[in-house]
Image (cartoon, rainbow, N blue to C red; front, side, top):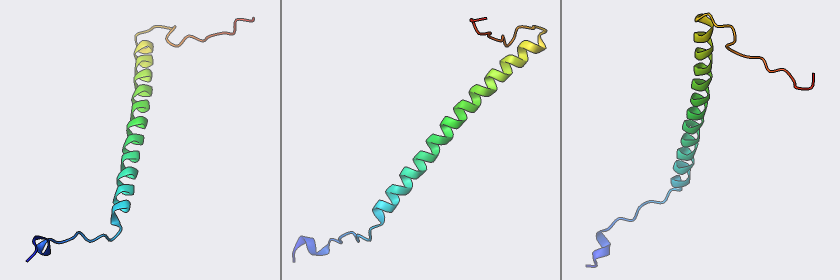
Length: 70
């Protein structure tokens, strides 16, 4: 009796590329959510700082930059 006779060979049904594709798609979705979340947090932080400035009674919280040519 050969030692290899008792071993089972894995069935290759072609599902490996599908699982890999789904994993890559999931990773892309997670990375996209992280990037969007980062920009959302930065926008909220900026608005919070502006609101804190305005509520403290200051007037020059968001200075307007004028063109230098005039």
